Length: 106
Image (cartoon, rainbow, N blue to C red; front, side):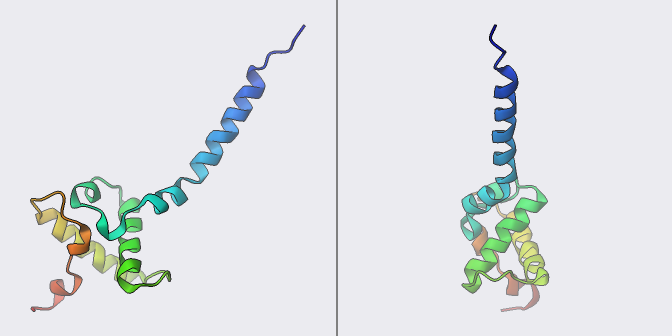
């Protein structure tokens, strides 16, 4: 009599699912558009994803892979939130946010 294959298949499926889920953060970072993210997509993101998006945007702006300071990311999030909260065009990319414009009159 053959033993059932379902337990082995269940274990294998669980292992694959665990591997995929544990790599979600890396996949999310790789697929993240950074500054090219449109406001319509940005406003739908959860807080962690917004922070990841803005961090990538700041890295693009500075031209470095070094992690930006928390203050720099927080100020950029404020600028992006202001831009996207007042933006009527959902296709406007978050790179149009003006961090300096919040604090200085140009």
